[in-house]
Length: 332
Image (cartoon, rainbow, N blue to C red; front, side, top):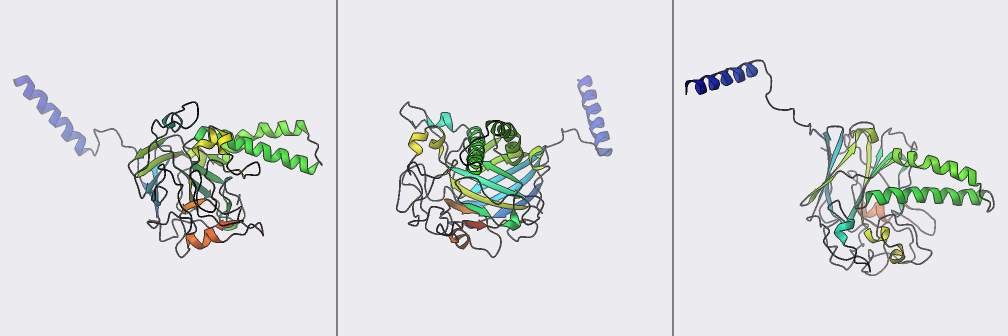
């Protein structure tokens, strides 16, 4: 009994000594410093005011209604936390094709109904960067927020990365043929193909470190991609689209609009009326209507006005401004 008391006394003395020196007996916790938080109104998951969800049970009002996006500093990167109005739907064993492929075998990251795009303007130099958004968004960012990096959280990140590479190569192939009146320089094309993977990896990131908790989804972006933690002085354009998870597993079923359909890149398109397999509420004759259900807008701007300001006839897509958290009252 005396030996046990001695051990207790020694341990107590050690702990007192540690405390007096200002040391800690616990392993250092991972930093979770809040870098910024951007908030969005409740109930605006309707794009420019008229878009409606597909008429299937996979989608319900509120599923794509983003309420806030928080960036936190974690070891080696930035953790983004997106909070939605409703609990995030998880994939079940529903069959999605004639072979009996189950949805949960495809959507392995805990969600399947939405994509989150974050276009990052690091240098804040107008016109320095890209203004075209990812295919299928049918919109651009304003030149003042030309972006250098894009983070795309999508249910199928590996498939999205491979698809983007193919799209870039095919686009260059068409450009080369147009410039040479139908003749293709195979050697030049192969050289371009070799450079595409590195270029894509530099500009686009598809997170795979994902965690779903009720209405919140968390995803981590490494410092190696952003060049450091997300900075509140950078510009951010954030949009939400409905995920077209079937597109990547059966392209024949995804050809809803025929041979002349536009590239959707993981996002459901929009059309007039109501539909099972796409967004409804579209305008007649508007091929470049953005299928964007929700977005973060700077203070004083209107989501409805921004997303409705486009013209297919004039080939003028909607142009979306970003938010600088350090300067905008919606950031904290």
